[in-house]
Length: 426
Image (tube, rainbow, N blue to C red):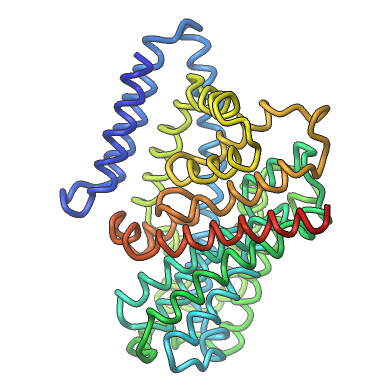
């Protein structure tokens, strides 16, 4: 039955990859995968139905935490955009060549991700690109670069990527050492693909047609105020988490509540028609719920592989067969492009006791880098990639052809940079 569960996952994974040729929604396939895999697991598990239901409830809670965060972040970005807030940034980006714009967007994504997180940064930056570039094909390429840069930027801070956060909370890494240890490798991971892409990408920046009239109804004060309010809400989340140690989704929901209250107060004197498109209620209707549903399905499907012991068994097999830590961790990073890096890292944390590998050991820093950036190699290998896939309708095979080689090149260059740095400093 475990073989059947793995077979269902592989088949559904292939169908998701073939979404556009088959013209079948990836969200539907992801939901079917989740339902079938948990059903098969419940029938075959020696633990009994009660224990499986308990595991499902735990995995659902983990999935819901990510989904609530995604909905909150997407809504905040949508409200900021509806007020024309992103014009504060786009009006200051004066690049006329695509190659120049590529470097600007890459560095913004890299550093913004270290403050926020890779998924939120991807949502914000792709929204910005819709205001900077008219051609959808050009935006697709930039979306891929944003995913690479955001994942690279998220790897070197405790709050930038969920796997780094897991290691930080678990005590495997400390804030100062992870920043010092991974900044160089993460920067190389971003710069190497950008340098390569600069030779590929030619042409001039063609801005989109003037944005809808409704956005121009907001005053300059409202644009500026809601932009800084929206960004403050997003930046508030990692601060909230660091202080309270409560889950990030609670912080984003709290921030969304304050933004909602602020918006109501700001527009309370306007007529219903004048303020309708600026409200949180309208923003909630505009966010891409199909992408949210896809998130639910794919995360629950992968969670089955963790619950039934297949991912921990895979990690143990790697440890037995390979034995070389740098190679094992590098392979785990590559695997995170196929399956969720969260259960992979969780399994690894259980495999390597801290009595043997104390905080800030080589394995933990290297794990944070590889698991955080390896997911960029495939579009559904990271939360940032899945978000980009939904926001810009990126095809799996298009990403595999155009972006995956760049991401793999950056991943390998970053590994070389980290190993060199580690050898020189230790």
